[in-house]
Length: 496
Image 1: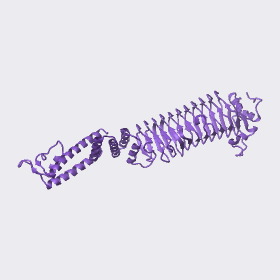
Image 2: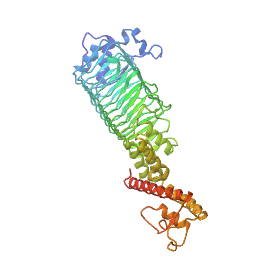
Image 3: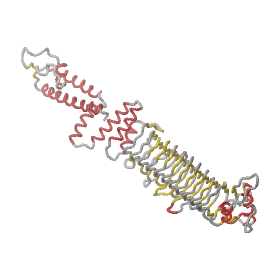
């Protein structure tokens, strides 16, 4: 069919003819104030196209002119009425620039080629179970009622960049649960005044929210639960999320990067990465979070952060978090890492300490690993009964729970020096006259300190007065040091 139907207006005939040639029909005046689609309701018949005519052109397309490929390319039009294309198979390229759609665009169950909407204004796009054999592009558009593209598929790229989207049903601006995107997805610099829901979506390339703003105060703002991303997920470049972010059970082949933006800025907001699996997690917000961050059961490969990018104790949960490498976006000491573990565990749990220590060991920083494990034992001690705490303090002071073995040697030297000096000044009498070995205060003190092993000195002399009390004290301290050393050695050998 090459002759336009008789019911078409002059402008609609131009649409028909442009479609046959695959040319762009430009209805603009050239004056920016007159070509703003936000003011398109005042455009006259020369710029008005009925939505049912567009549907007819797409569903019952005219024949292409010889040497041309059909396409729908229109700039600066006012489209009146709902554009009903549900269930259709559209084989033509679809591109609208600077247009006003006064009613909904309906593509439920439709199968189309690339859809390109730039600088357009419309109420809502319905595209449930839609299939796009190409790209889906919204660039610098204003959509008052949001996008509804649940369980849809975009074979190539999804771009929703520099747009302003308002809320639709249930306060959602983008409702795209179960969406599948074959390549990249970007939501860069767009403003979403309602929830963005991509729950269960799958992406073959990176997903970017560079400079994006999502505004849903006190509620779930960004739902990325159970998403699957083959590459990385980026929230960067001055992004701002007002409301909570959910990434529970997400699978990300690369890194999850939240850097150079604002999230969890209010006490009633949450960043939840419960059971996330990712190649990395990079958190470097522009301001310390005041909400809650949950990494319970997550596995994130390379963990990168700054010491001040985590919330206070009680608002951080890192139970069963695992990672292979720890990096710092800003200088961080081992004390900062221990403080992070203690903030992230409301009650004592060994796993977060063991995890951090194993990462330090893998990096060849054994001294830092021992410091972490010493902090672990001190945290554990706080939950013991009185006897356990007392014995814990003894082990800590004596040998640092086995992670400071030099302390035992220092105590031994100090006690030997004291004993030698006292017994040299006031030698004890022999237990049996004529049978005692040659008197030596050093060896006598050492014999008192060493349990089990005997050098033949302590049983040959009989101290009295102060010397007797000192001898008993040295024997007791010898056993205490030996017991603490044995407990510490066992702990270190077991890497507890």
